[in-house]
Amino acid sequence: MANILYPCVLLAMLLLAEAVPMQQERGLIFNLDAGELCLQSAQCKSHCCHRESSLSLARCAPKAAELQGCTRKNLYGVYYKCPCESGLSCNADTTIVGAITNTDFGICQDPADTLESR
Image (cartoon, rainbow, N blue to C red):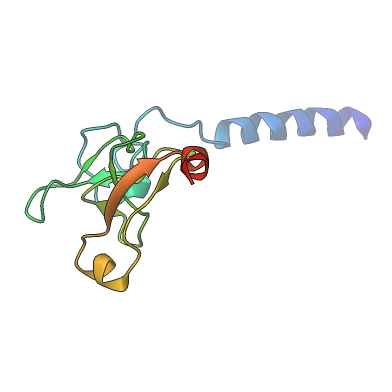
């Protein structure tokens, strides 16, 4: 019985190893590089699908660095200004009017710097 069990387990492990997909460098729909067309931020490596105006096509763009213009993360997934890089916060307008009219822009700042200046 043990003579049959070991080869079966080995065969199952080999088949499972082939079935597990390897992460691709770049896809057609997800994992897109900066400059490629997108519909949602989830498609981009940088997680920012950016458009210049309401008439332009959205493209993947890098997240906003410190002291650059930004927008808070939203439900739409397409931004006129990208959200901040990790560790930074966007001091944007938080009113419902700013969210509806798409004027909720701010500047990326390090939260530690903001606390020190107070």
